[in-house]
Image (cartoon, rainbow, N blue to C red):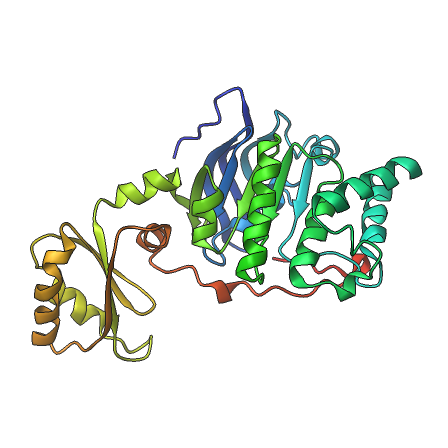
Length: 342
């Protein structure tokens, strides 16, 4: 897919990026995309799709095998130090030290940015106010709730006033109220001029936040566009048919054979719970679908009809649904014990 990055105002340009691990594992296999300056860009994909590898290359943590990458006009392989000065990165695993207070965590990171004492104190106060942690500033981070820890971790990523902020699964493990609060804060950062590169396992989060997104699967980009355009591109209603049986034993093939000949059916995809049927005027087809499955002795557990969602876009292009349980957050381990993720 041709990148939009030929525009002069692109913050990130990736062209034919490849990363191969020995002996012959193609983690990223020739992807191209661009992130425009000032947008929230969503980067979605199932586990093992190549998301983490791509982010590590963009954030200077991993070298690439082939292809071109620029961050604000700079090649991260050639100017890693300069790139690091303009980016922020908040990983899925919170990297706060439980034994330090919220304020001390921020001052520690300020020190890593070589800030003077007075400047660091002012920056810590500014960020504590920005993420609504003033009242908890002098409590140990180990006493914080999950949402508070996420906000503190995000504040740590903002200390360098990044032009480009990478958010890797920023709301994983949060309850709906904390997730909504963090969405609002991310939107505020973007409105203030920060370009945001977002990975998420929540389709509603991508739909709500992303101006544009890419879906990556098996190391290749399989879809790109605005959430609205991607949903419209399905061009049909979606009937989800849940089948009786374990995931391994469900009669998906029999269901496909029974349904594929019905007038109006455009495509049928296997899903975790059965099959998804994409069809024009799907409401008028429901009765015929039920009859066809009954005649083929395919037992239906449930059936639902909806207009296309990002979940449907994801299933259509990857053949599976993004599952929240695919990504399990771990409690922060402190600055000296941060785990490396593959």
